[in-house]
Image (tube, rainbow, N blue to C red; front, side, top):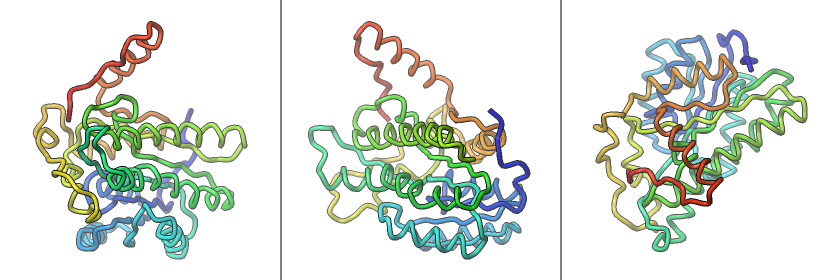
Length: 276
């Protein structure tokens, strides 16, 4: 399937989690293509710095604080984006957090926080933006950031696993429903492995009622397979251009997913990747 957006120059992208990491790298890459970008994040200081950096590079950028776990905040973001630039053509539901828990020890507060950001955030994004994108009559593309945890289950991060596998399902059904309804919306799901971002310090933004040790950055920034956010952003741009659904940055996890599928034939336990 080919992409449906054509020339990206002058089109508009909205990116949550856009103040750093993959989100900011996508904003920079889209801006280099001449796109308008709206970045949203829960961190005010980082958001201002990111927007200033984009503007200094000549990107038509706007920024708005947004808590993706709150529907009203997402609705306000949509209002802002449409007021600033008109129609939105690319939506990147990218904001994410992670918390380290054993599944039988995870608190309800921990579940609520991670699912609120990582799963409800993309759900709210689709619910809020896609009807407007369809109503515009122009083609659109939604990129949902999942993880290799969206196709495999990593021990010790139960809420993250559940959320990211939900994001994969959300992305698949969005694409299927759009096809069946005949509307010009494509979807991609981004499933990166280890990327050099700040997700390992997610606790900097966690609610006070969520207890537990910091997830930590061990292995996230120094792993031999770790890649930079800019490489991920390039893959995302390629997927939008080519109309690809799966965006897989680390091939070895595809092999593990194939092993998981084979286990379904025999009833064997699924493969368990090494803990992060």
